[in-house]
Length: 94
Image (cartoon, rainbow, N blue to C red):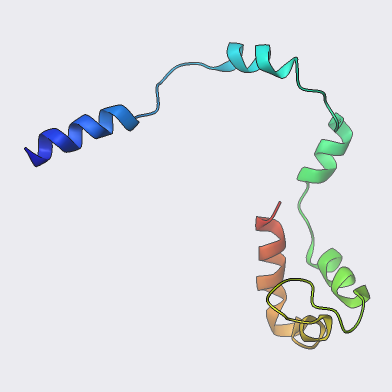
């Protein structure tokens, strides 16, 4: 019984194996394009550690950048050993 139920719900939740490109094209024609190809390529490029470091160094003082309460000074003071994690977080947020 367990196996039967498992197979039943797997079948219901399974992603159909169909090509959706034609449908996507039909729908896409009604969505205005706000970002051109050049802008899109710029958004997709890899963000460098140097770029993130420059931003961290120039952030306004005595500010918490998010709800976690970590201030600019925290990120600046811990940059040397936190930089890999911070760059990784920035990359993942794109």
